[in-house]
Image (cartoon, rainbow, N blue to C red):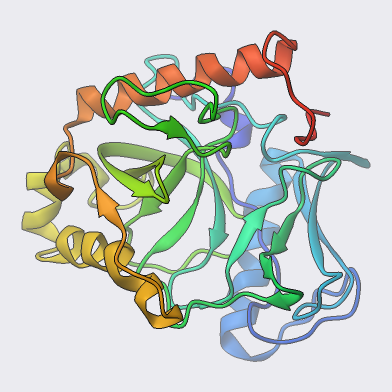
Amino acid sequence: MMGAQAGFLSSTAVCGRSVHLKPSACRAIGPVFQAQRSYRRANLVRANLKTVDEGEQGTLEYRLAFQKDTKKVSPWHDVPLYANDEKTLVNYVNEIPKGTSAKMEIATEEANNPIKQDVKKGALRFYKYSDSLVNYGALPQTWEDPNEKNEDTGCNGDNDPVDVIEISADAKPMGAVYAVKPFGILALLDEGETDWKVLAIDAADPNAEKINSVEDANEIYPGLVDDVTDWFRMYKTAEGKGENEYAFGGKAKDTAFTMRIIAETHESYKKLKAGSIPNEDLSLN
């Protein structure tokens, strides 16, 4: 079913989300972490891709690095975007597991782009509004161009890979890389920048075949899309800021529109990577 890139569909994982681990440690700490370790063993062997803890979780220095064989690789640059020949599935990098609050992200300015915790005014960032309702991460080999005004939203891009809201019921480990099926997209306007958020579901989820639209998702997970839309509108209010805004009245666009935005941001990424767009801050190796 998948094409030649199927080796990247499997998951990577770390062994803990809310505990401190020593560098490169992978200990089972209770049933949850045992499951995460099994998830890692079962899937990384096929992908030949693994994650390595560098530093101690919960510190400014902590990084989750990616390796293929013995070489460090980038989850942004070295994982292909499309997960099948038909380009109906895309690969996804999970940054923030469902039910957690640490604001983890791909470090686009660092060599090999490990995952790190976002920092503001020298302090690690956590969601204050609530824990994440979904698995949340990014699409490899995409980029929202801050120099180009999007014709659909009227705002420039936010200089990041495209975000993904992954709605499957299970919490996935930080650093998991797997195929997802997009079915819609939200256009958050964050401080005047376009911040696309693809709605998707794990392609291996039993409900994936049934979900081809936002309407389908609403039937299987009643209220979830609306809840997530409201969450991203409101979450900064817990930090004393105003509500976020959306283009299109906060309504999700359909699958065809979603795939067009993914393709456009992939083209922007390729121009960035080729050096045809000026870049001083992002690490492209």
